[in-house]
Image 1 (cartoon, rainbow, N blue to C red):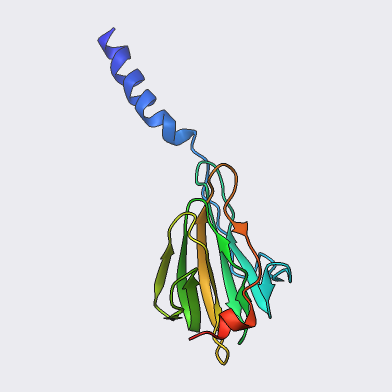
Image 2: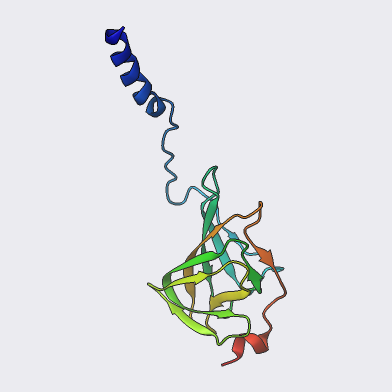
Length: 154
């Protein structure tokens, strides 16, 4: 009995790895980008999916490039959002707070349900990776457009 238990136990411990899914490599340029919907963005925002949410990893990400003057509408994220600025200089603003400059190398954390917008400055483009988690099947709740007066406010 002891001779059978040892090999059986070893096989049982190794078995979970044998049933694991294999890794998935998505090559640069394999996912098509698109221009952001005019209902959600002012100006030109080019969105490239980075990765979708895959169970149990309920997070997705997109690379967003805003041309000068472009910005998102006001919005919130039920589980928050992380912005990793990779190129250029842009602006980010929480409703009721001062507009902040964000530039390459900066990381912005937007807590759950905090209304905000982000985008390019009036004269420079900005690119960031936006990472957001899903909560109850939602990762963003869109609001109204940022007005030109709100965008240009110092």
